[in-house]
Amino acid sequence: MDATALRALQAPLKDQYRSTPDSAVITLKAKGSLDDSSIACKVETGRALAVAGLHPATGGSGAELCSGDMLLEALVACAGVTLKAVATALEIPLRAGTVSAEGDLDFRGTLGVDKEAPVGFRAIRLAFHLDTDAPQEKLDQLLKLTERYCVVFQTLNHRPELAVSAGKA
Image (cartoon, rainbow, N blue to C red; front, top):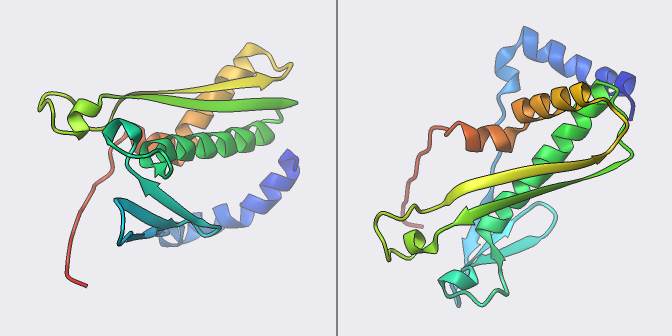
């Protein structure tokens, strides 16, 4: 897809969202079911069933997916798609590229071993390695706009309002 095709695809959506701002607000949903025989949660991804379980550092077998890994994978996916869209819009040619994310966890917090240890990632690093002849100023602009428009990056960077509830089935 080139910049013209991307603009043509997005123009009617942008017009709609400008004229009817409420139409731009969409509620995304995820759903899972608790496994009845192990410490796991079966998450419906829309394409397949993903079974998440404990990370080996918390006593898991490693056979199930780790939700921390899934969070990093979601960041990589979103950042990669966003970077490609921005590069297309700015007409920055990319021959190839990789996106990687890594995060540091202190499992003492998760296991309640140390009340001062954080529960969750203390640091996340996102990196792009791009095969391109674009000048550095274009790459700087590409990175700035990718950060700005990547939903997962911005969600991690600016904590959203969170709510939790529980009820009987």
